[in-house]
Each structure stands twice: as structure tokens, then as C-alpha cells.
Amino acid sequence: MKNKTKTSETGNGPALMPLELRQSLSRFATGVTIVTCQGSEGPCGITANSFSSVSLEPPLVLWNIAKVSNSLQAYLDAEYFAINVLNAEQQSLSAHFALSDHTLFAGIEFELSDRGVPIFPGTIACFECRTRAVLECGDHYIIIGEVEKHCSNGGRPLLFSDGQYGTVADSTD
Image 1 (tube, one colour):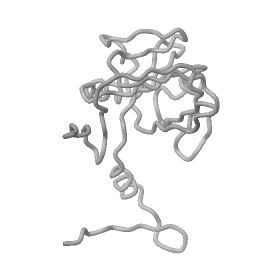
Image 2 (image 1 turned 90 degrees about the horizontal axis):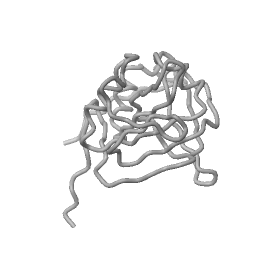
Image 3 (image 1 turned 90 degrees about the vertical axis):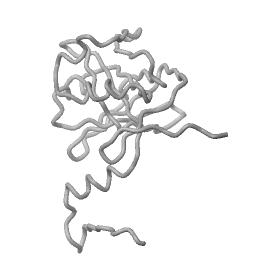
Image 4 (image 1 turned 30 degrees about the vertical axis):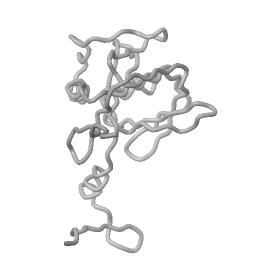
């Protein structure tokens, strides 16, 4: 039995429909991160699944932030930020930082790095970065950071796909 496929085109074909495009993009499973920085009003955190490596030499990573984000200016102004890669047990933390509330750190366990950036305990990886470039692109900004410090811990990653959280299955090796 074949899957029914919807298609959209640009160019000479029909225009892309934003909701249909979003649905197609959601089929790509991603890891879940919380990007943190120190804003003028205190610590900022935002859930993001747009994290990606760019280069090993120099060590560069990127993530995207929507132009409509309440904390946009804090990230555009930040000299440093951290990418906290969440483990499978940190789904509630992800949901918490997906909110648009400026009191998000109330009651949340974190510590400040040497650079003054919030770091969460229990993540499977963390990348502390100096902002290298900010690129305006469509309805988002792409923020590129140079990794100055990183750590990697055990655990299974929290994943997001098709509007739902998940994780990888245990290995049967």
C-alpha cells in the first residue's frame, strides 16, 4: 500500500502553503535544546530544535530564533550563549522554556558558567559559545557561535518530531 503524498511547488508551479510546509518540515526528527544567555533583565532561555554544527575548524555551531520571540533582543545583544542539549527525562524543562514568559527561571535549577550564562544540570551535552555572527534570514535570525567550552554526558537524547516528544530506542546489542 502506497502512502498518499501531498506536494507543493514554487517557481512556475503552485505556491507553497506555510502550514503544509510546516507539516512537512515537522517530519524531520531533531534533538531538543534550550539556548540560554544573560539578558539585560536577567537570564533568558528558549527551547530550540534548530541547533546544528557548522565547522570543527574553527568550532562553530548555529541555531535559529524567530523574529517574533519575546527574548529576541537579549539573544541579538548577547556576547555569549549556551546550547543545553536535553536528555530524554527533560521533556518538562523543554515545555517550560517553550513558553513566552519572562519569569521562566523561577524555581528552575541552573548554575551560571564562567561567562555568566545559565547551564542546566543533567543535560547530555552543553556548548558554551561566543556569538560569532548573526544573519537575518526570512522570519528568523541565524545565530552562529564559536564553541569555547563544551561537555558531553551520558543519557539518551530528547527528540522532537511531528509535534511529539520521543527518544531513541535502547540498543539490543
